[in-house]
Image 1 (cartoon, rainbow, N blue to C red):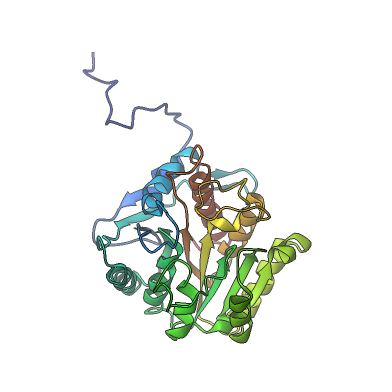
Image 2 (cartoon, helix red, strand yellow):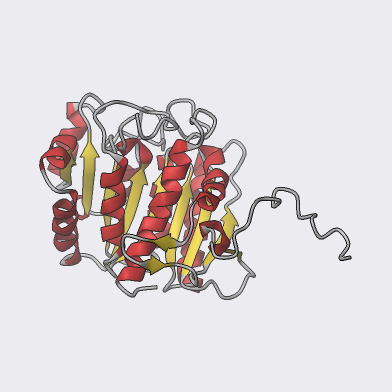
Amino acid sequence: MQPFRFLKEAGRAVFQDRYVKRASDMLREWDGKDGGSIGIIGVPLSKSSISHSGAVFAPGVIRKMLSSYSTYSIEEDIDLLDSVITDYGDIVMHPTDIVESQKRIAETMEQLVVVHPDALLIVLGGDHSISFPAVSGFKKRWKKIGVIQFDAHHDLRNLEDGGPTNGTPFRNLIESDVLKGSHLIQIGIRDFMNSKTYTEYGKEHGISIYTMKDVRNRDIKEIIKESVQQLEKEVDAIYVSVDMDVLDQAYAPGCPAIGPGGMESASLLDAVALLGEYDIVKAMDIVEIDPTIDFRDMTSRTAAWVIMQFLKGKKKAGWI
């Protein structure tokens, strides 16, 4: 008799079907050497949120939720079975200094894109403030960057009233000369969640703004194709930033800034899958999930599915 054959590592004692591979099985701890073609990194910062947020816990929960899904897409008959995601772990944040934490994020991203210049990067926030240092570090590899931002908010708040918060990342990128306003496309901007001043700031700086009215009245795939065609003439790489509060509150109860009138999850998932098909799309972040207020991890589960849709698009187009 084989001794203790029913004992497994704590937390691993779950049902296993020999014919089903879980998405979480694609994760491999980084060995400090080769990073592979796909990398994931956690950025657990939420002290910079202008409202209470436990987004610091999101990277770990999103990773865990990958175990909820298999690697097979029945819609496209694509299996990610052999794909490997190098998990670089989480960046250590300063306990009190937000600016220092952002410096650490930028430095780490710079190092990653230099050491593994061809890796597809998936960044797990954290609140949306992390996009400023993440994109800044990303620019070490790609000099001309375009950003496609899914969000209910412009995130173009002034930096004088509160410093670098989760409401300022794209203004910070523009005013730091990291990103041209004309190279930023915002999708899903919502009624009663922004001020006229910041909408005008966006228009003055050439930002392309698709409101939720645009999303409702048009095919989301048309908007994505239009956005990529606009950017690919001007930039070397596109960075996708997914603020989960772009979704209607019914689909994302774990976002600190929930509200009605947002996108349906199917629309966001279709958009991300299509973005994955473009070679020029080199990185994506997912932000603004607070697992402490979520319901049955609904929002983190959707974030995990966003990752799978993105990789499905890359696989479909032959990029991974």
